[in-house]
Image (cartoon, rainbow, N blue to C red; front, side, top):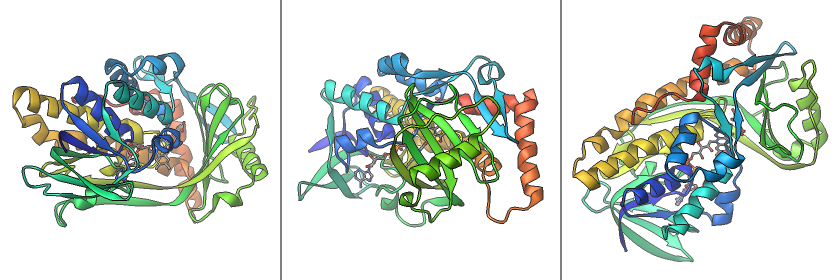
Length: 391
Ligand code: FAD
Ligand code: DHB
């Protein structure tokens, strides 16, 4: 079996790439370790930058997103028991974000690929990639207990942080930059209407808390917790009591309801350079991770895929490999700005073990700056609504 671009991973990066390649007349096969059900139900990101929304609409997969997505023109920062709204639309010159869950984007993209006759091999775990620096790399994968191969002209490693593509690159090629944070997030899904129609980021002595949403009836909530906590130690009562304490502000009423999911996620900043070796390109979480403050992970993956798809299109349509050769440089220029934003928000909003009174005052001063000084607010709003794409 052969294809032009072999794509490892059916997350947002791999699926969007496959869809954009199809629209450009380029053949691809997506190989995904998990089942279709699993990838469609994996609860993850929720906030889409304006450019991500425009990319999905332009690619013909924005119909449900436009109908069901919830447009947010601002964000609410809470500290000192008070709500401070940032008017993202005004401060960014008219741009907004849209709350539409990653699960829905993944569903829309899978439906589009399947509808167009695209090949996505689910429950097929890639074991290794041979000959990345030769002319015909080969993806080796396991399906139903037996081993198969896919020969490709190029490989796109869209297999997330724990995938195999990055590790297939010979030692010494990649430089890794990383910071691990000494806390985690407990992510909660609750059948309760959100108490506010905008996302809330709360700074509190007990730790950070966040209220977002998945629909007018379903809240998505997060609580900072110790890294070694287990979700089973968080009873529903304990969760609601912490959320009430951390999200409190005058006139705000948190709505409770049945909790349907709880999971703990560690946090890190991580980048590898370059994002390419031989005939393999890394995109999305396979190449970089941000801490979730700022909701940038999925949006960063879309930024990479735009450049990579345009590079393949230029190569297959016009025989020019210039853009593919510059893929890593172009993608990394944007990624480092996104990393800066996510890491600085993460540092500003969380409680670090042993932080002193001075550090807490600095965090509060940063929060006061971005919520009261329009110049600082503009920088925040531009990053939150999404930095421009080069390609
Ligand atoms: P992924 O979505 O990770 O997709 C990679 C795919 O590759 C997966 O389907 C995986 O099963 C598959 N794969 C892995 N190994 C193999 C293999 N060997 N063979 C075949 N397939 C393989 N971002 C936010 O902005 N806000 C959030 O709240 C948020 N929460 C998150 C919670 C969790 C638990 C995680 C892990 C991430 C979260 N993120 C969040 C980040 C965001 O979801 C990611 O940035 C986004 O999913 C990146 O898309 P991707 O396609 O690059 O990678
Ligand atoms: C969501 C996740 C985030 O990390 C964030 O900063 C805002 C919202 C969400 O899941 O909706």
